[in-house]
Length: 446
Image (cartoon, rainbow, N blue to C red; front, side, top):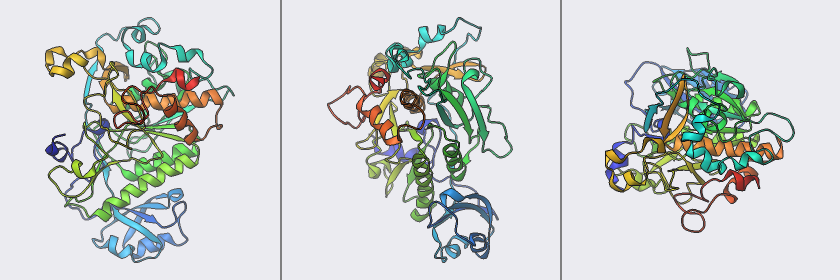
């Protein structure tokens, strides 16, 4: 890895199509947002409002089950003052996750109505690879229909879902928006709809679990960012809604010696993410996330900082999540995919341009159909990235749950089945590129 590569993109990374949790630099303003984490991780203490008020803050949002509040303040000394309270664990300026463009995206030019599953048969090598040409759909629970008759729901924390798309509308459960000024969960950008199609499309294209249900937890407006507390709130809400799986095709990097921020400020946001993930898992939700698209070894935080000092960490990256790297049609590690010993659980198809291009990088050898085709608002598009790999693993979690019945397996059991059933395509055992291997729905259900 070229050391300067990640450093140059530290504040503008292309991780998983959605940008950096690494703090963004903003012009100073009179009023700023902070997150305040109390020592009690699952409730807010009595009198917490007065504690915030005494330090010059006003509560904007309370995440009571995460022991956290979001506040606004004009007091430049708010953080130091509020930390004097024995109730407080951390407080820092709130960071943002910034949406970025796809690694690659092209619309399918023919939007005319076609026969059922025609695009699946022609283009969806990725879904065929996971399902073994649909063999997994013939097994109990394989399409996502639960053996106990209860809907298996995958929550998608993303840009929303186009719930009117003909390939998605029959499997759309509901949606909620956490975006100020955008009350509708309907996708206006495309990324969330592409993710949803990889999970549960049932039409011209198919998802890994074409009878799973998908729910939109919209946290991004078109071209806009989301605060950490919005994403944490969406994850907490999804858990309270009793979804079975959550997919988070988002993420970035935390640089622990960013000159714009103190390390202790970054730690507050990291802890909030971890609290939300742990809350969901304790409620029985299998949480799946993408590994990122910087072609970097995320197990080496010193190297990730490039020529800068300190450590850079992928975030969110809880050990209790299922973290997914990306492969191409030839079952190779995709050229953009992050990797790292102990940082990847499994690999799944995310698309690339084919081995001929990979060996030469000659643009003339790019094969666009070796990317991943899925739904977008108004039609279909090819995309590539770990954002496309993660939802296939989330769908696999859903069909495993469907085979056993809703609320039967724990998230750790689901994760174990996914890992144990994966194809060991590289060197034997757990490796830095694939974790336990390439996901295999037929193996998992057998």
